[in-house]
Image: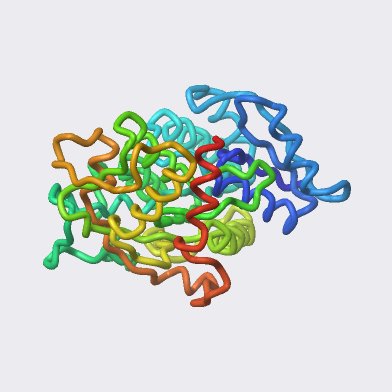
Length: 336
């Protein structure tokens, strides 16, 4: 029986992906890392009586030995939770390397990064007309460094593949919107960060002009990419995938928006719910934002889709835009 170790089952992306994988592979055995075992019951109810069940493994990202062991034992590992936790990265790579050292079939890993890795460093809250537009062509992905956000996870993961420790796909989504298809209905963590930024001031703030921007993608639009990449890893059957690991880094974005444009809707919805003193936004200098707020409020993350289309991603209007989902997203983050 194929065993899947799943990290991030309770999140917006992870919940949607786990349910889709359960339905696509009803005979697989899923083990999900969870701080509270009770939440896994929701996934088993969603899957139905004849589908794959999820076994909860109680633990956190800091349980290095547990994560290394589960990685070693699994046929494939899926991480839809964290792209920055160094301890998690090291534990995963330790498990994958031990498989190779012990003569087991090559491990498989489906990782979630994010297009914040392409942030351009500006502090003015406006576009950089001379800035680089990143692609997922191999020449661009080889330029990633460990000093970039998410780079401390992505770059060692790419190098580990070059060194023959594992097969992997890295999905790199833009900002995620929409309520996931998982049973827990969790909002995107991106909105939680923006809510935290305005909690103390009771106003939605942007930096400078607020004309900087980055991409967005609906959570359910992401799921087919994960399902297809997962299948390709399974089909490798423990043998090294052909081609370069830098060809398996996949950007996923649909809609580019200026931050000030959508934050206006965000502010209006929060005001309706009594969470702000005013629906009017205010501009602040870079120095007044929190570290995380400054990261998201000031910069641009210019990139474009390429390799996703080779995984069958379609250019379509099947999924709603950020404008359409934002009211529901705001209600979900307030409830959370």
